[in-house]
Length: 259
Image (tube, rainbow, N blue to C red; front, side):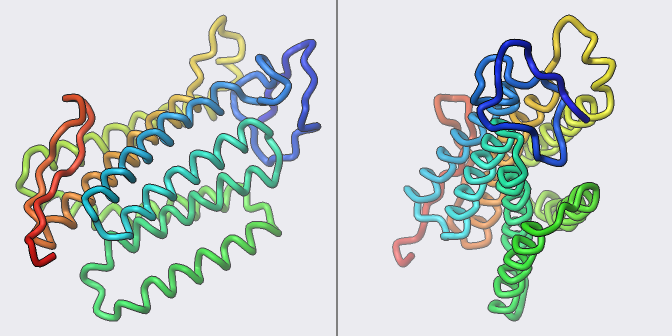
């Protein structure tokens, strides 16, 4: 899907080499930013991941959650680079971290009950490394989307298990917010992707893909916070959901002195 380029503004990055464009006019506001709204809409995800990282470090959660928040930031930054340039290399800096992030979620979701603890991280690390190498050489197109969707589907049964075993009302609300933001974000993604021709003649572009980024920034934050609550419950850390400035939920724990 090729997006038009604004008149009078040249491209700093040269011709588009990415395998996909979105329904936003290119280089409207700057010769350095191809898709302006699709670029800046990643900022909420970076800020939310930073807040989650600070909370994980301050309360000494397991390192897996610090790595998870950092991966969210890397993904958002990679997405910014991709949408700002529409170059193939930067597209990989968006898509490869998407897969790495899902592998992290799979590890966090399934590792507590995995009997052979060294095998799972080793396999997932090698899987992620091989994917990055292969993806750097080949353009997957629709195969990438199918692959990513399958990784997401692998997480659903385990997330549902955590949800039904969690009695805390506030924690369940986090899971519901996770589902709601995923649903709304997906609708925005589909609308922008499949109705671009109709949108292009509207006087105002609703920027569906930019809303997808914003929703997914919150989606990742709610997922991470819910998983932190569940893991703290497993470890006996007496977690509770509190709110930053009375608005943004996060997990507060009370570790035993011995830990």
